[in-house]
Each structure stands twice: as C-alpha cells, then as structure tokens.
Image (tube, rainbow, N blue to C red):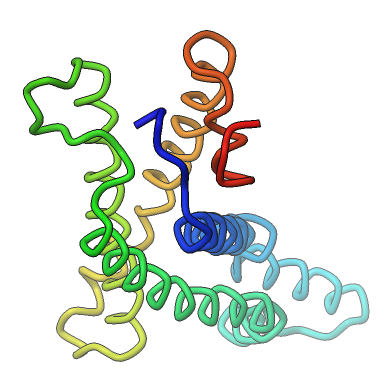
Length: 190
C-alpha cells in the first residue's frame, strides 16, 4: 500500500467525503447539544416569562426547531452530497481496486489485515448511515423508528473512526512510513 500513489480522483473523493462527514458530525453534535429543541425551548420559555408571556413546552419546541432549521438543512443537503460521493467512491473502488490492504490476502500482516477490516467496516457503516438518513426523509413510515435509532447512533462510529484514522496517520508518519499523508494531499511522496 505504501508504494501506491493516489490519483487526483481518489484524493478528491477522500477529501470531499472527509469534509462531508465533518459537516454532518458537527451539525449532529450541535443538534444534540446547543440546538437541542428542549433546551432551546426552555430558554425561549424562560425569556418570555421575564416579559410575563407564557408559552407551553410544545410551542416552545416548535420555535426552537425553526431556529435550528437552517443549520439542520446543512445536515440534510450534505447528506445528499455524501450519498453521491459514497456511490462514486464505491464505483472508484471497484473500478480501480482497493487503496487499503486486502484483509483476505494471506501475505498481509495482521496489522494490514486489521487496517483493511477497519476500512471495510467503515464503508459498510457509512452505507448504512446514508441509507437510514435517506429512509428518514423518503422511506416508508414503518422504517422511520428503526432508521432513526440506527442513524442517530452512527455519530459514535464516525467519531471513533475519525480518532482511529488520525491516530493511524500520526503513528504511521512518526514511526512507520513517512510520506503517506503527503501522498494523500499531493498524490506523490515529497
């Protein structure tokens, strides 16, 4: 794997997917924390109460959701982009072969096999995440509850993969093979 140079298409897909995942994770974290409808709804109620205006929880939550809607639209549109990027990445993967170690190749070391399994699991989970996000918007209502649970939990594997990915880059650059990160940026070792 270290001897391969990454094509411009591979690098553009890599960085586009990385940016899309970053936007999706940030918007999901914002929705779970600062833009949580109940928390923002409570702030709205508290501030209105200072002006002697009462508002029930349900209406406060509706206003809170409207406040967060522009941010959440970014999540949805970026999700559409990620679906397209994922499809292009799978086409590129099957047309050009794996750019990560094949976990089924007996000549690969245990480390290389683990690395390959990690990428395969990541792509499977990413496919499930994009599918459940799509089903939340356009799927039958009978799939909504299950899709929402699976989709909401996907933030945890995304965060875990990001930490593992950066950890692997740091370890590789410092202790194993210098220049892998440079190849992903420039296409060739510098």
